Length: 195
Picture (cartoon, rainbow, N blue to C red):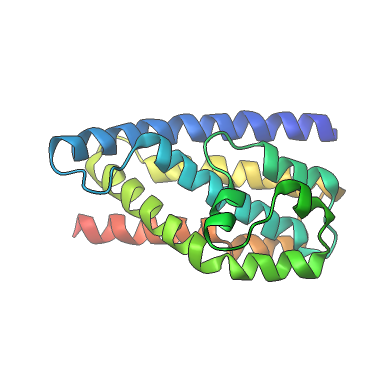
Protein backbone atom coordinates (compact mmCIF):
# COMPACT_ATOMS: atom_id res chain seq x y z
CA UNK A 1 0.00 0.00 0.00
CA UNK A 2 1.17 3.51 -0.73
CA UNK A 3 1.24 6.20 1.96
CA UNK A 4 -1.86 7.74 0.40
CA UNK A 5 -3.63 4.38 0.60
CA UNK A 6 -2.61 4.02 4.24
CA UNK A 7 -3.80 7.55 5.05
CA UNK A 8 -7.12 6.83 3.35
CA UNK A 9 -7.48 3.63 5.39
CA UNK A 10 -6.71 5.52 8.61
CA UNK A 11 -9.34 8.16 7.83
CA UNK A 12 -11.92 5.52 6.84
CA UNK A 13 -11.28 3.42 9.96
CA UNK A 14 -11.34 6.48 12.21
CA UNK A 15 -14.70 7.45 10.70
CA UNK A 16 -16.07 3.97 11.46
CA UNK A 17 -14.79 4.14 15.04
CA UNK A 18 -16.21 7.63 15.51
CA UNK A 19 -19.62 6.53 14.20
CA UNK A 20 -19.67 3.65 16.67
CA UNK A 21 -18.60 5.93 19.51
CA UNK A 22 -21.25 8.51 18.63
CA UNK A 23 -23.94 5.83 18.96
CA UNK A 24 -22.49 4.71 22.30
CA UNK A 25 -22.22 8.33 23.45
CA UNK A 26 -25.79 9.20 22.42
CA UNK A 27 -27.07 6.10 24.25
CA UNK A 28 -25.23 7.14 27.41
CA UNK A 29 -26.33 10.76 27.04
CA UNK A 30 -30.00 9.72 26.68
CA UNK A 31 -29.82 7.51 29.77
CA UNK A 32 -28.15 10.22 31.84
CA UNK A 33 -30.58 12.89 30.68
CA UNK A 34 -33.47 10.75 31.99
CA UNK A 35 -31.83 10.55 35.40
CA UNK A 36 -29.33 13.10 36.62
CA UNK A 37 -26.73 14.21 34.11
CA UNK A 38 -24.84 16.20 36.74
CA UNK A 39 -21.58 16.13 34.74
CA UNK A 40 -23.32 17.27 31.53
CA UNK A 41 -22.14 14.21 29.64
CA UNK A 42 -22.63 14.53 25.88
CA UNK A 43 -21.98 12.20 22.98
CA UNK A 44 -19.77 14.85 21.42
CA UNK A 45 -17.65 15.12 24.57
CA UNK A 46 -17.39 11.31 24.67
CA UNK A 47 -16.06 11.34 21.09
CA UNK A 48 -13.73 14.24 21.95
CA UNK A 49 -12.33 12.17 24.83
CA UNK A 50 -11.54 9.36 22.39
CA UNK A 51 -9.92 11.80 19.95
CA UNK A 52 -7.62 13.15 22.65
CA UNK A 53 -6.67 9.64 23.80
CA UNK A 54 -6.08 8.62 20.17
CA UNK A 55 -3.88 11.65 19.45
CA UNK A 56 -1.78 10.95 22.56
CA UNK A 57 -1.42 7.31 21.54
CA UNK A 58 -0.50 8.08 17.93
CA UNK A 59 2.15 10.55 19.06
CA UNK A 60 3.53 7.92 21.47
CA UNK A 61 3.74 5.41 18.63
CA UNK A 62 5.30 7.97 16.29
CA UNK A 63 8.18 8.80 18.67
CA UNK A 64 8.72 5.22 19.89
CA UNK A 65 11.30 4.42 17.20
CA UNK A 66 13.12 7.74 17.75
CA UNK A 67 12.11 8.92 14.31
CA UNK A 68 9.09 11.19 14.04
CA UNK A 69 7.97 11.24 10.43
CA UNK A 70 6.06 14.37 9.37
CA UNK A 71 3.14 12.30 8.04
CA UNK A 72 2.80 10.58 11.42
CA UNK A 73 2.46 13.89 13.22
CA UNK A 74 0.15 15.29 10.54
CA UNK A 75 -2.03 12.19 10.89
CA UNK A 76 -2.18 12.50 14.68
CA UNK A 77 -3.22 16.12 14.30
CA UNK A 78 -5.59 15.81 11.36
CA UNK A 79 -7.42 12.52 11.72
CA UNK A 80 -9.72 13.53 14.60
CA UNK A 81 -13.01 15.40 14.46
CA UNK A 82 -14.18 16.29 17.97
CA UNK A 83 -11.18 16.59 20.28
CA UNK A 84 -7.77 18.22 20.22
CA UNK A 85 -5.04 17.24 22.63
CA UNK A 86 -3.52 20.72 22.38
CA UNK A 87 -6.63 22.17 24.08
CA UNK A 88 -6.15 19.71 26.94
CA UNK A 89 -2.46 20.60 27.02
CA UNK A 90 -3.35 24.28 27.31
CA UNK A 91 -5.84 23.64 30.12
CA UNK A 92 -3.09 21.65 31.89
CA UNK A 93 -0.79 24.69 31.78
CA UNK A 94 1.24 23.71 28.72
CA UNK A 95 0.27 26.23 26.07
CA UNK A 96 1.54 24.49 22.94
CA UNK A 97 0.04 24.69 19.47
CA UNK A 98 0.38 22.13 16.71
CA UNK A 99 2.61 24.62 14.92
CA UNK A 100 4.92 24.67 17.97
CA UNK A 101 4.71 20.90 18.22
CA UNK A 102 6.04 20.37 14.68
CA UNK A 103 9.18 22.28 15.68
CA UNK A 104 9.84 20.32 18.89
CA UNK A 105 12.58 17.69 19.09
CA UNK A 106 11.92 14.10 20.13
CA UNK A 107 13.15 14.59 23.70
CA UNK A 108 10.84 17.56 24.26
CA UNK A 109 7.89 15.67 22.78
CA UNK A 110 8.64 12.67 25.00
CA UNK A 111 8.72 14.92 28.08
CA UNK A 112 5.46 16.54 26.99
CA UNK A 113 3.83 13.11 26.56
CA UNK A 114 4.82 12.24 30.13
CA UNK A 115 3.60 15.58 31.45
CA UNK A 116 0.26 14.92 29.75
CA UNK A 117 -0.17 11.52 31.43
CA UNK A 118 -2.34 12.80 34.33
CA UNK A 119 -4.57 15.10 32.27
CA UNK A 120 -5.04 12.29 29.73
CA UNK A 121 -5.90 9.81 32.50
CA UNK A 122 -8.81 12.00 33.64
CA UNK A 123 -10.18 12.02 30.09
CA UNK A 124 -9.61 8.27 29.80
CA UNK A 125 -11.47 7.55 33.03
CA UNK A 126 -14.62 9.22 31.71
CA UNK A 127 -14.29 7.43 28.37
CA UNK A 128 -13.90 4.05 30.09
CA UNK A 129 -16.98 4.58 32.27
CA UNK A 130 -19.21 5.63 29.38
CA UNK A 131 -18.10 2.86 27.03
CA UNK A 132 -18.31 0.11 29.65
CA UNK A 133 -21.76 1.17 30.85
CA UNK A 134 -23.26 1.03 27.37
CA UNK A 135 -21.41 -2.14 26.39
CA UNK A 136 -22.68 -3.89 29.53
CA UNK A 137 -26.25 -2.90 28.67
CA UNK A 138 -26.06 -4.11 25.06
CA UNK A 139 -26.38 -7.88 25.20
CA UNK A 140 -26.80 -8.75 21.53
CA UNK A 141 -23.58 -7.21 20.22
CA UNK A 142 -19.97 -7.07 21.43
CA UNK A 143 -19.20 -3.37 21.10
CA UNK A 144 -15.75 -3.70 22.64
CA UNK A 145 -14.71 -6.45 20.23
CA UNK A 146 -15.74 -4.31 17.25
CA UNK A 147 -13.88 -1.34 18.73
CA UNK A 148 -10.70 -3.36 19.32
CA UNK A 149 -10.71 -4.70 15.74
CA UNK A 150 -11.08 -1.21 14.27
CA UNK A 151 -8.46 0.33 16.56
CA UNK A 152 -6.05 -2.51 15.73
CA UNK A 153 -6.56 -1.90 12.01
CA UNK A 154 -5.99 1.84 12.49
CA UNK A 155 -2.76 1.13 14.43
CA UNK A 156 -1.60 -1.24 11.69
CA UNK A 157 -2.07 1.37 8.99
CA UNK A 158 -0.47 4.09 11.14
CA UNK A 159 2.65 2.06 11.97
CA UNK A 160 3.16 1.34 8.28
CA UNK A 161 3.19 5.03 7.31
CA UNK A 162 6.85 5.66 8.04
CA UNK A 163 8.65 2.50 7.01
CA UNK A 164 6.05 -0.08 6.03
CA UNK A 165 6.38 -2.21 9.17
CA UNK A 166 5.54 -2.49 12.84
CA UNK A 167 8.77 -2.55 14.85
CA UNK A 168 9.31 -3.70 18.43
CA UNK A 169 9.36 -0.12 19.75
CA UNK A 170 6.03 0.74 18.13
CA UNK A 171 4.55 -2.52 19.39
CA UNK A 172 5.68 -1.66 22.95
CA UNK A 173 4.30 1.88 22.61
CA UNK A 174 0.91 0.49 21.57
CA UNK A 175 0.89 -1.96 24.47
CA UNK A 176 1.72 0.77 26.98
CA UNK A 177 -0.49 3.44 25.41
CA UNK A 178 -3.38 5.24 27.00
CA UNK A 179 -5.76 3.75 24.47
CA UNK A 180 -4.71 0.21 25.42
CA UNK A 181 -5.12 1.17 29.09
CA UNK A 182 -8.66 2.27 28.24
CA UNK A 183 -9.44 -0.96 26.38
CA UNK A 184 -8.11 -3.13 29.20
CA UNK A 185 -10.12 -1.23 31.79
CA UNK A 186 -13.31 -1.19 29.72
CA UNK A 187 -12.97 -4.97 29.50
CA UNK A 188 -12.44 -5.23 33.28
CA UNK A 189 -15.51 -3.09 34.00
CA UNK A 190 -17.64 -5.12 31.61
CA UNK A 191 -16.57 -8.36 33.29
CA UNK A 192 -17.20 -6.84 36.72
CA UNK A 193 -20.71 -5.75 35.64
CA UNK A 194 -21.43 -9.26 34.32
CA UNK A 195 -20.85 -10.78 37.76
